[in-house]
Image (cartoon, rainbow, N blue to C red; front, side, top):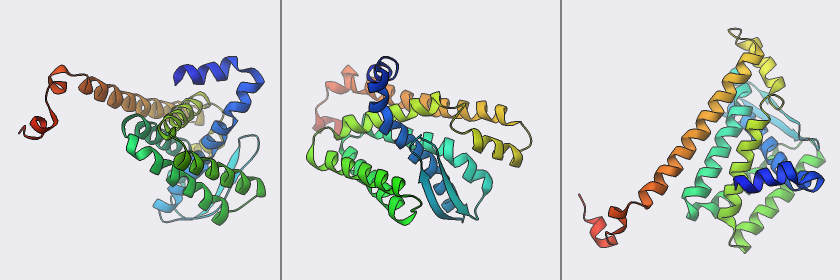
Length: 225
């Protein structure tokens, strides 16, 4: 997955950028949905969400905790990306339900938090593609893993550009550090989340390769106290 992503991004040229364009749009959606989630969990409400063709976007909210809402964009999208990747890597049976849930979330956002025709068309189109993959193909797990991993890598690589406006507003709320310091704090949090995710994955792989476990039959394993 890493090889595919970096190969497309750094050696794909214009074609590579077009291939990864949906990843950019997904990262933007997760970013804006993170703002929306921050508003909802702190008692606010979401008025609308907009995603622009250049990969930028914004979310209008009312009420809620401003600090949580601002953090929700960058840190929330990284959390969502980690969850998507982890499910793809460890829970094959949940890959299709996850794609359907993501599709429903996109469709809901495009219809009920409508702000522009491009946003609605993009999200509904994305949702239809995900539904098609979940119901008509056997590649759901591969798609989930690639979407999760590539989204995380995009978020990490975009740390000094993507959340810039959020950082400036957050620095106004949290005057302890200037925005460029908060930028690196947020980045460290995202990298730690990703590292913990990989640690969980590699630990599960080691456990699966344990010869002591593999030599025990299912019936015997169930009787171990």
